[in-house]
Length: 364
Image (tube, rainbow, N blue to C red; front, side, top):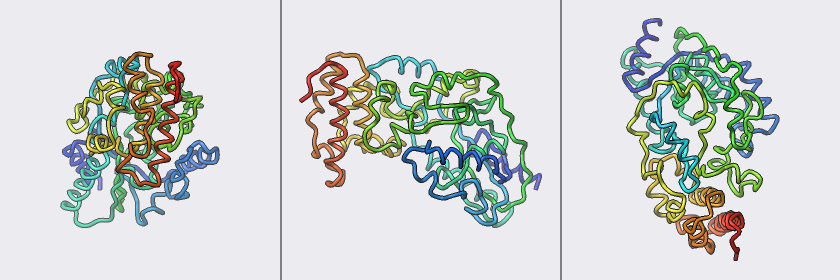
């Protein structure tokens, strides 16, 4: 088993995973933390976080026979932190979370993990396993920490002292009694930069995130209107937020890689808010094919852009973009179910009106 564990890590490296470790599946302390987080309602409308009970923290209940979890990390994003900060400072440009600039990682990682499992089977014969990439109730960060991939930072992201936090996680539950790797030690110390930099104060305490205030949640997961009190702090972030990672000292000194699949598409790293706001529903679907942005849907895309335009400088371009969309109705959503299109139009229009009022412009 020791030799097999080493071989698995070598195979993972061949498939492009920069980090790979093996964890035991005991997650008692993490289960208590999760239960407390859920009890406080900090998950917002993400009901799926509580839907599966304790299966998330009990791998053997999710996949009977599981003995170990193989955890892998796949890097994303180039060494462009300064570019990211400049974009955030430019109120007329759109900021998209670095992970969402290119190809959706789910399918890419799942294919590579499946290949890893199949290559293991080629060497040892059939064994029990299941591959996960955000596809089931799995405490992936806790398992990755236990597998030695990094520690869970105060912002709740996983941090590797040699690679920062710019990487995706994936797992394979296996029924093999593999030797486990030592758990990673925490190295945040007294640093609280991620807490201090959060625009909406979503990190309410070290290691405690209130999703209801998190810009990533608000712009991606949350349906319907965004709380007006939080809109100004969102700035020009139209899909996700990276501030807590950009400020982290461990990312400043991390070795970065350039995964071609995650390079920016459709000039999303330089696009203006006005140009993106002009996309039709068909154009949105065409341009976001194979992108994680597709999951937000067109209505939330427009909603987020309307908020960002409300926070943008009061230029003729900003006002023209908002006014051009002011009278949108259900016809703006020809590819959406008719019973929902009218509601989507009303929701977006409300955010446009808010944006126009922010600029002192007439509404109606």
